[in-house]
Structure formats: structure tokens, C-alpha cells
Length: 616
Image 1: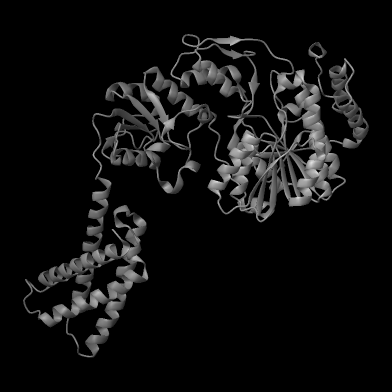
Image 2 (image 1 turned 135 degrees about the horizontal axis):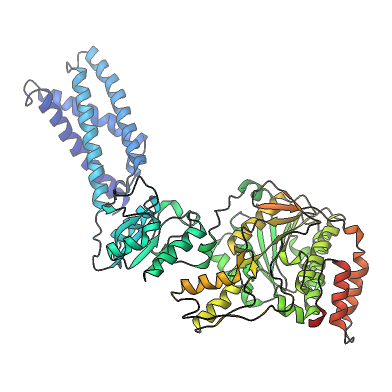
């Protein structure tokens, strides 16, 4: 129905409601209407219709869809009727002084009350029809909703209104003791999360939906294990940051994944601070096609930069993120650039042509065992590639340069970690020689990245096992990619120059426990359906990771999830001399002991580097 037709129908309906309300008021006040002339009836109706119509238009009453009404829409009616009563009362008193009418003021009040009740009731009927138009499919899977709060209620509403209701909600679970035993949306709150197994048996549950957007990882793990113990499949509603405008659709209800088990609280960003250094600026992202780089591209684009430059070595991945951003942000100038950060002439051309003001450096070789066997490539990319990029940033007066680092740079035991530590030292040195604010952001593993252990475990589970874990006690810090990138961008807003920012990664996670959780989420039993096999630590690996050295320590920043490592004295290291030594080794090969020599030079630059020459 067009807006004009809907407006005309609404006016006609309100005209009828008001006419009946005035007639009913006359019938009650004047004992079946006796003693009231037609002209008096017409007067009171005209008075109310005029002032109400003005009030409705003044408060935009007809712009609301009343079948989706809430308290906000009810307030619109209240404001309109208050305006009508005050304005109509003043006009009525004026008309009484002029002798136009002799109707008492009390009759005006009765008419106002009856009309208000009638209008509210009519809107309630419209809302009720819309809310109850869906017929739940009792042949669908019997479903337990875990969480009887706003999110759980929205899930039930969507399930009942769905045109393909494959799930049939029958009961709630909630840990609020005041809700136990009561009914919400005509469904019982049957118990707490500690009583899931009993409730599943009592109501013959086949599927459970976790509708607690703020649930912690440990709570989700406990709920999943209880449900799967009873053979019930578990789905989950996204976190509150993913639910837009309070609306929930069935497509949002998905399987529980390992990211949910981390259960980190939503990150609060300083949007104004980020906008200050990104908005209307040309932003360059290296490694733009990678898992971290592409997410930086997505999030940066939402802060209204002037232009986004996507620099990467792999054409397919850069092309993919370019097309994605063009669809998401059609009015944002985006430039895809193919190039290698080891090619300084290419970098100079890019900087001179586009003049980026903000740089995010995410391009790096990150795979620990591969780099252990290919140290020359790690040095070329992670050290000299970074040096090329950072020198161009300083030369062309970039305002903020943010480098993605890693916890493996702390007391490194691998070539990859050592090269990333050298890269940190390079930008700290350049920060003292340039107007550019050079900073690094150090964090641990990200779930879902190409080098993450999670995709490997999932593939091994899909193939029937075994799932291979290097050591029973190995632990790692984990974040999701969006979380890590949010904090990287936030760190850029805190940059004054020279800092190494450290992200709060939460509690370390045992890799063996992560493997068990992934097997369980797949509906299988660890050790029974899928074997977990311990293979021994690989070259360059640590049993556990650290986020800062003892020498560095850390101090708090303005953001509760970001710390700042105390700056080390880079002048103690003759960095130019040792970089020259590395350059000769990697670009003038011929020495059979090149790999060993590279590691020795890295040890000179990073004294805490623990070399295992057995793998050299």
C-alpha cells in the first residue's frame, strides 16, 4: 500500500473512532443523549477533530507504523491528546465566554478520556494482530531458549512469525531466580542453566538456542557440554554488537563456534579519537589481502577516510577485498596497488603519487616453522621490507604509522619472532629522526587467520582425525580478528610516537583444550571419535608466549585493553652496522653457513633471542 493510501485510510479510521468516542461520551454523560442538541454534538466533535488532527501532525503521529508500536509510539498519542485537551479546553472556555456553547467543562474531560482510551485500544489491536499473526509449527524441532531476557524474547517472536518455522520453542532457561516458574511469551521459565539436563528431559528438547549476547566463554562452554551430553544440538545468537536496532532474524541464529568460547567482553572504542586521525585522511594498508590487513581495510573504511590504498603482493586477495569494499562503501575512493614492500622504488612511487597520511603495516611473513627453515626470506620481508616502508613514511611525512607486531617478538625463540623484534627497533629508531609518529602494536594469535591452528584442526576433524597438537601443555593467547583490529586502530589514536602498544589478550588458552572444544562443537567425542595426537614441538616454537619482556614491563594507556611497553634504549645497539651485516648475508649469498650467520647477527641485535642451532 502506498504512503498516500495508508495516510487516507488512517485518517478515515481515526475519524470513525473519534465520532464513536464522542457519541459514547454523550450517551454516558447525558443519560442516553437526552438534552443534547445536534448542534452541540457537532460542536464537540468538530472541536476535538480539529485540535487532535493538529496534534497528530505536530507530533508526527502518521509517520509511525502502528503494527510495530512500542512505548515510544504510545507517547506520541499521549502528547497529541495532551495538546488537544489543553488547546481544546482553552478554545472551549473562550467559546463559552462568547456564548457559543453552554456545555460544561466536565463533559470535555469525559470526551477526552473516552477518546484517548479508544485510540490506544485501536493501536493495541493493530499491534496484537501483527504480533500474533504467525502460527508456531508444532511439528518443528522442540526448542529450548536459554535466556529469558530481551534477546530470548526476540528469538521467540521471530520463530513464531517465521514463514518456515522449523523450530518450535517450548520453554526458557534463565539464571534469574525471580523468573523461575513464571511464563514469558506463554512459555515457562523451567529452570536455571545448572538444570539444563533435567529441563531437556522434561520437555523432550531437540534443539537449544543460547540467547544471552553477554554470556562469557566459560558459561557458553558449560551450556554446550550439558546440551551435547543429552544429544541436543546447540545454536547461538550473535553478540550484542552484531544485533542491529534490536532486531533479530533467524539467519543470525547460527552454530556455536570456537570464538564464542573465548567470551571476551565487547570492546568500547574511542570513536572520536579514531575519527580525528583517520577521517578525511588517505590511509595505506600493507598486506591488504591478508586476514588482518583485510579486516583493517573494512574497519578503517567505516571511519570516513578520504581514500583507502590497498597494497599487497597477491593480486587475487587484493582484488577480493577491493570488490568487497566497493560494494560496502560505494562512495569511498579505493585504490588497489600490487607491489612488494621489498621493492623500495615501487614504494617511493606509491608514496609520491598518493601521499598517504596514515599507514597500517600488516604485511609480514608470520609462519614460525616455515621461517625457521627460510630465514633469508624472513629477514628480507620482515626487516628490510619494514625498513623500506618506514623510511618512505618518514620521507613523505606520514602523520601516523602503525605496525602490526607479535608476542613472538618477546624473548624470541624463532627467526620469525626475532625479525619482528628487529622491525620494532627499526621504527623506534626512525621515530627519533622523523616527524612521523611510529608505533607498533603487539598481540598474540588471532582465530580465523590463515596461519591459525583452528582451520588446521577443523580440517583434521573433517577428515576423521587425528587432531595433532605439538605439546600437551602448550598455551597461546587468542583474539578474534575483528577484536584485534579494533584495538590496533584504537592504538593509532593513542600514538605519540615510539610506543609499543600491547593488547590485553585475556587468559592464555591451552591448545589441547582448544582442540577438545573444537571436536566437541563438531558433535564428536575427543579420544573416542577423534584422536588427539601429540607430535612434539616444532623448530622455533615456545611452550608459552609472553607479551612483554621483564626489561620492558608495561604501563597503562587511556584504553583499558591496551598497555604500553616501556621504551628500551635503542642507542645501545649499533643497528645500522648489524643491518648492513644482514643485508650482505641475504642479498649476497654464496656462504653455505648463511642461515647460521643470519641467526648469529639477529642474536647480536636481539640479545634475548634464544637460538636453536640444531635446526640451522
